[in-house]
Length: 263
Image (cartoon, rainbow, N blue to C red; front, side, top):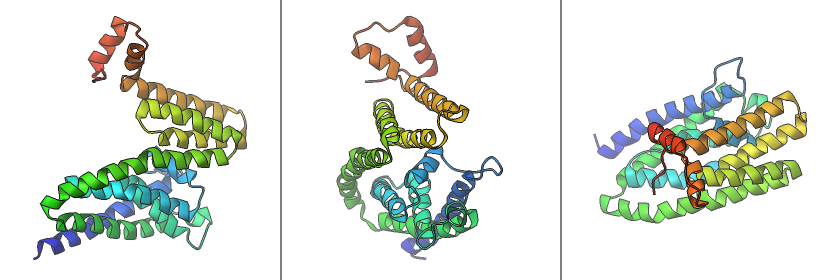
């Protein structure tokens, strides 16, 4: 059997399974803790940030398509963006094209699984077959061209888009999105996760006010950033940039945990 045809058939099966599981799993997350969900917290936040707009869902997924394609061409591997971002968002966009009822679309595991399987089947097939069809001599060129383009799209284009959405959602949401986005850029190197969390926190405060739930949410976000900064060695980098001596106990802690920052 032709090698390209073999890759296509295998990709169709794998893509359908990936799309089915990822889309059904993320839809089940909206019903937790009554049922067991399956998906990343960032996926849930990013789906909510698109505010149930099919165009926004498609655009968000499309923003990561080039990065996934460049990775498939340059390295022969699929990134986590395929099943965490592209498939769920495109499945949501297709699901809500004619029906905006969340209970029947984004929050419906069966419907999302159906559309996700179709999206995964086509997406993985396109990524793998095009990557396999390109001569090895051109794969390096494609990676060098698409790599920087996808990096520019992810940072700073996507952070700007999400920051504008946060600001447009209101003063409180915009403030939280700006603050957490800036902090995420320093800690994680990309502002999008922080802006998404800022939108979630801001909207929660707008809808619920300062309740126990929102206080726990804010505390969890603060703890998340603190742990992330500690594990990435941001504390040591900050002290070094401020020309402050790093305490020996802190250096030993990072040495023991393998989180010492490298130049």
